[in-house]
Image (tube, rainbow, N blue to C red; front, side, top):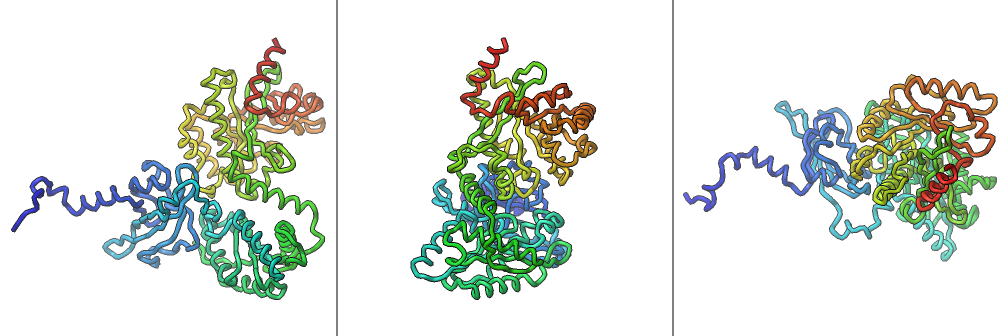
Length: 572
């Protein structure tokens, strides 16, 4: 029998089936992962790590769902012996730059000798072509990653076209604003991963209630919008709304049982209720509030007593959502000095993200922070700010500026302590990928209320952040209760509260708080010292630093050094 011409050079060990399988796993261009029955990663190849922007040592031990979000198709759940032996679904995996891209995941059960699936092989096939992968492609910027539905940006575009078409043809148009009743409480109970899967199932059912020409989009959280084109009469809108409620009637399967959900639906009609995008969305949102007051699972048409405050809130959210996707055009990082309360010398800086809002000019973070949180944009904006801060600090070091010697503080969004960030990537992973020279000069301030809600998860993240040598602070101690026992278990070195806490009637409380913080080894800081009266109120408090308009407002980086030089000269 003839031999292969090169067979004498191949070791029998190299052709052993087990070795061939190992090589196929390691060298595959598709991402491959082996998980245990609970979904924890046991082994991952290099292609998977490239897809998800992680190191192999970081992947081991993590739940597989940490690295992607599901699109439309719900994840099979249940006992191992009742799960299918193989299935496929579209997911979004993150890139190392924070963006997400579509991937087809195939899951194959690896049964034991008793035919019980103890392990699973997951294969990830990139769905982007080489052309799709270029930065000029914006398709996935317009898709909500959790549900696969159009997001706010694409909704605005489709609504604009629908209104233009309705005006040309003289046909009506209806807009439904949908809010899932009690979903926040449900999400807090079942967890964010299960909540995301539930949102995908909600979207799938609601899509079944659509007509062929209609559009369903997700605004964020548990809010959805339907555009009903062509026959957009009140009667047709009511029929669709009722059909939507019927689609939600069957129980939803969750990990530990079943769940009943309903939706409050508000309806606005074109041209009777409004003739533009803002008017329709604003009116339908107001109608949804009216429906909610009637009880769960109700619908209501527009209430023309809609307030100007609600209109302004919607306008702000529209502008902010659009600006957050091109932050370099609409945002800037300014720095507010932190001063020594005794000498008045500048001993630190707080970085503040300012928004160049259309028609209203530069707006401080307090003007849009709540809106950013509602829209789920806080993490995206904080990450952009962190990149700018690192760039500024690197430039100060290279130019031997005295600013490089000052520590910098950034207040983080509440969402950083949750697992459901827009790309599923924890903050410590993001910072490592920026590859900073050192982070000993950086302090991250966490809102006090968030620590009370998710202490265990926050504790794990904060301890990982502390290993990066950066420092941690707790913000807003004056806003809500302070659990000092919990605070003492966290790796924080500073705590901040506003000057209003030291008013005449509350001065003893502020003094006691400072003493208690010092006992815990936490240095107190007073912010929002904006007037001479504020400065007088905090005089004598045992605090480590003070900050506010009374000393200096937030300045652009290029003006900061000049201020510091003038400040030093005037004090000399």
